[in-house]
Image 1 (cartoon, rainbow, N blue to C red):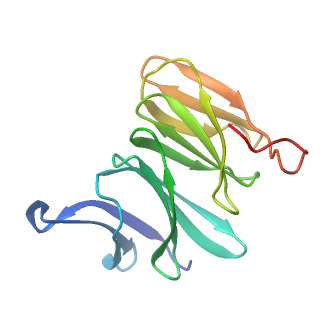
Image 2: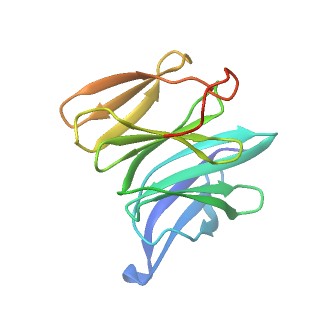
Image 3: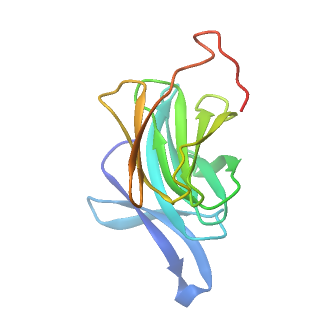
Length: 164
């Protein structure tokens, strides 16, 4: 996508209509609004696949959505058991990572958007943030009172299974 972009998350028209506005930073004006979540959006991350730019958003509506930026439409919905509080596109592996209100970490294939695994990292507290550690297979998970480091791999590439 050309230029710098900003995503405005909120409800417009005094709470009557929700949508995620995509803005151009220069000039600062709204480009379009992405509709789809029925709850507040807690997190977002951009990623590129096959030369196309995508956006993943995590919401209190127990879903993460994948948006195709050039089409301005939803390519898929990733269901969860609780609100999605943090999302991350891994910079070197074809993996999307999502964290939830119940403290679970979901690993998704970023090519076909299929669930690879659900991890219980033990705290039971909201996942407050996700970050990649030096572009390795390690992901840092921030909880309310703890940090966890998990090791993830591209299981399809290494012959592993895709179950939970």
